[in-house]
Image (tube, rainbow, N blue to C red; front, side, top):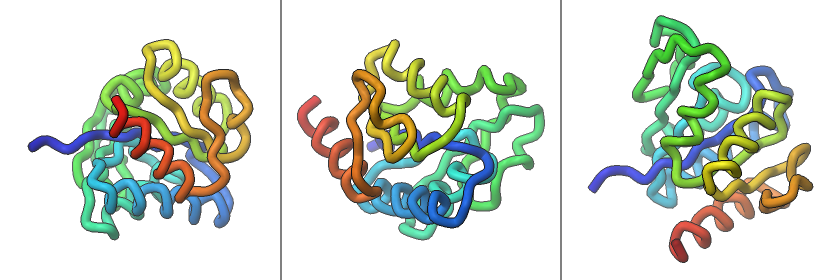
Length: 153
């Protein structure tokens, strides 16, 4: 049976607390049986990929450039898109749900695209008050919300 995909989105540069949260989200999603899809680079993407990989799960990275070797070392499957920031749509399109961990305007674009195409979004931190987004108090809460939503879907 193919893996069910959940996107984890967030900034390419972040502090240690946000990195830890992203790692916990990736780990929790992998333990729950989901593969994690990210933009493949550093920061939140690296944390989520490392978490998923350390839990024995699958981390897929859709990199913005032409070289899949740009992916962080914890990505199991790297896909070069050559699309720059436009890859954000592919990240959320290929996932059944999205977890946003803090982040900047790139993260906001992924949240908006996900909501526009009807994907559930749980957010930890900065973007959790957007209409249609499910606020999550912690990494565990975000994973639980995604599990509950996808079980009901």
